[in-house]
Image (tube, rainbow, N blue to C red):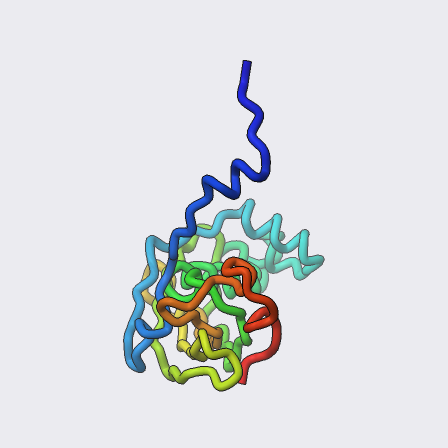
Length: 185
């Protein structure tokens, strides 16, 4: 017979494990070479393109893409963006803190089915938040490269980044209201 585990049992056993980096790790000029990379497959491209209702034939019709001068099916640029952004999360924002935006996004070179993308990011600014005392505001310049070393995309992204020692959520400490909502400043 199996043991019944209640929600209270799970809460009691749960241990908060910090992930990612904190604000104090984000010194201007620091470079993060993000892990492993990701090979984009035909299935990735077809699923993403269909789910986002992006019916440009360059993204799912190889003969059409070749007739337009491409060697094979082109990967949907928004999938390229999401992949490169995703590769950076473990280093830059997994430690917690709201996403504030992306600026200056440029697609520099086509990506094709079968290409492997890697990413690196550099801290371009970091300052303490005036409105969220447990956070800083950090902007990174992120570059995505293919397996041949061509830069295929670049963008700046900004997040609130938790300071070392700041509570993950006000509710976790039994606090009310402090830092639970509100924008960055």
